[in-house]
Image 1 (tube, rainbow, N blue to C red):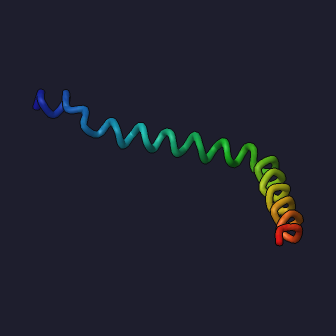
Image 2: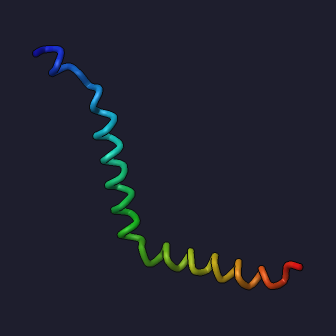
Length: 53
């Protein structure tokens, strides 16, 4: 029983889940800013693609 309580092999999974939750929260908070940046990038790519020959 003592070895079971001291076993920390599952800690990596918990940490990964917490990191994913924080990243999802940041995406939700900055959703409009991220959309503006992505739209500007695609507009730039589209406009510059016509000048490449």
